[in-house]
Image (cartoon, rainbow, N blue to C red; front, top):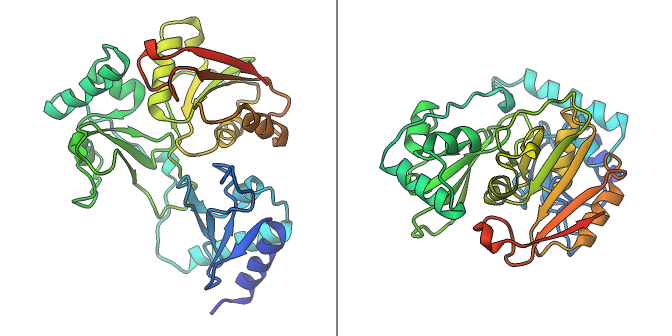
Length: 334
């Protein structure tokens, strides 16, 4: 049975988020996901599910962003209601006080790279370099691109115990997400039913977790301007970095990020919140995303609607995770 506080919060959520729908059993609320932008075709479609009782967990079925509702999440949902914010904080504090569950911030969780050279790492490195006609070493792929080339070595070093039968980890290459909450695995054997598998390492943590990815780079937050280069997928951003930035002056003070199912706007917002206020935003877009999508995204944002945004398309293939000779750039500025 719900207590009065949960009932009030459910009412306030329904009143303040549009569109919003209660599930049949009224245990969850469906809203549009602010992190991936939800359905582009249907503006009333809603894929983020929010529990209507403490601790108000949420999960998006489109982009897999998950966490527990808090003041930041409400701002992302464009909800500015003090009564609702205070009610959620009070209910979550009460919930935590009455449970023995230990909460850990995944952003502070250390994952060890576990560099080893064996038959699995050799196969992963060969797959990686074949994609880009590159000559990266195992160590470079692991340190620069946060790759996992020998899965069970990595699992053992970090005390990770995935269920048997989920995936053939050693027949894949993995990449750690920006917040160390996910590993995105890609099959390299062409024999698995799933090409990709997203392993959520901390599915029950009291924090927002996502698959967003970034390449390791040194960026000075105090610089007048920082470049933010974004693609949709991990192999796209690695291709863009390798072909157009590695070894150049523009490599420095540039963030290279992949949305991995989250919206481009959510990636930009993530770095603005980290303190990068003057961002030079450059997006290497998939071919099926029309320029009008980015124009609409910019117009609706209160954080970067005055920024110039440069968009690049590949006129030969649908994205940028291909050899360089299969890329021809078309540029637009909005």
